[in-house]
Length: 312
Image 1 (cartoon, rainbow, N blue to C red):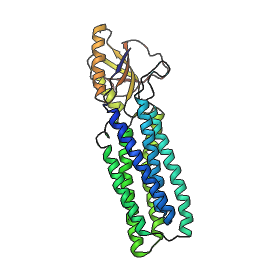
Image 2: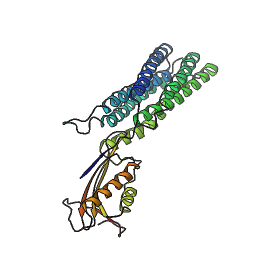
Image 3: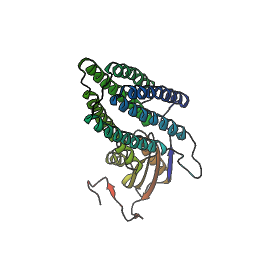
Image 4: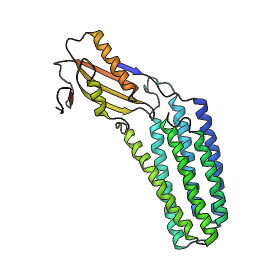
């Protein structure tokens, strides 16, 4: 049985922590400004955007917390450390977003039946500030967005918020020149749709990974075929691939080799396979080698054979 423990994500802990903390403080200040302006001027679009931005503050806090736990070394009780918290952070964030959307929608129904006068100029001004703040916060994560899924999620959330702020700015300008106050409520519905669309994939992917599903960027059939191309491999079965965190994946598999292979040759075979898997974003590998003629111990034994193009 062989184990591989390579870590290919090279995130600078101090830089990421600083960016997250700065983003949290900056966005929390903006949330306060939006909430005060929204209540003062009765702008549901501003309040809904504030709710969305607050959920992003929570997302940044969760990302920071999970990122800190990611750096804690494994121990006897948690042999993989606390890597799974990065997946839970994404799941909790998605749930919070959907709850916030429900509250916004409930309030918008009441506002639609009794529309209130909205200060279009103030709405447009605050939304304009949001465009700058969200855009700057997104820029903080550009460098590392491809190294960690949580960081990429934070980056995409900030970009989405910037687009939402553009929508609020447009509604403020329309109200300023037309006094169509219902536009504020309609824009809040548009914001709700944007949040749901951006949250759905986050919710679906986080639930999938929480259930140890195969990460969506990994094709298990393709990996099996690549392994079968390695000299000495006769078949592969009991293949399991799952996410340890938002950045690291693990795999276990049983490999059938020729009964003529020596121990040294088997070690070379495992080394070749692990090298292949590194390029497939799988960093923790456990391989069990079996000689031809051995029987699987498990009841469900699916064998992928090089000479046959179907499962047994």
